[in-house]
Length: 322
Image 1 (cartoon, rainbow, N blue to C red):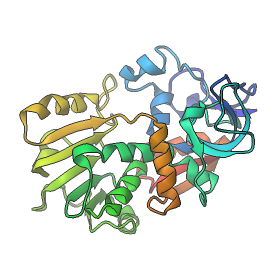
Image 2: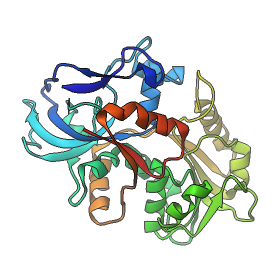
Image 3: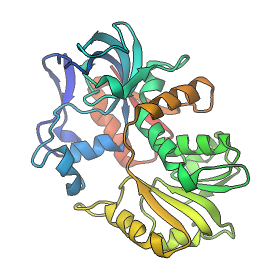
Image 4: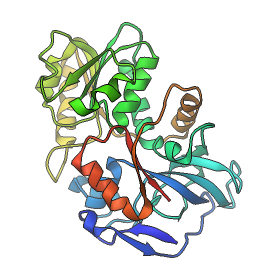
């Protein structure tokens, strides 16, 4: 089968389209014929091995898994001995390590039946970013009517889903994005747009009950000035920062500072959860969440898709078609 493989950490130049052996599912896995694979920052981190802290999980000297990709959608070809919830022919989506390939072997508990009405491409871009948005808006960050929510990076993968979720709960949502994406963000239902090339989030008199920062480049002091006295800041992922800790330095400072403040500062590193995947399926089927795809690339152009991600500001998601 054809797959996008890398033998060592590096840039997109480390990625290579190769013919490799088809994987065999273990007892708790399925053999998936991949039709589409999502592209998100986790793929970049796996490719580069950055920040270095992440190599504790990815592999210290080289990637533990040589085939790239993290999200996918396709048809089940075969199931492991302990898999009862799926059968050959089922159309599924979910977290799928090694999805930049014609076949992959994800664990059955990381999959769900593909949402009715969604294409394989649309389903493939939903899992990681969608689950991150769901987990970001829980607890004290839960949006509701009358609450003011600011989404930084509103035009990106996680941002697009976060905006849609917050709007669906009746919140007053403001999106932060560049001028090229302003119309796209408005179409998602926001009440206002902040063009970060012309103004900062603190330039307006508003103070927000919830700020979800998916961009990773603003200091905590600035974010807190835009946050209501008892508001909640959610920092998504570990973007930005240096090569050793990445954005985790800012994240850890937020957690250390939070107990001494009336404001609630936290960060999330989203984890795949079957319950969240089923929630995403329901929200996609009832129209609450609509995947937005900026561009689709064939498998052999996966490096170009990651270059697009590196250069920044895709409107919605990027997808690989297999």
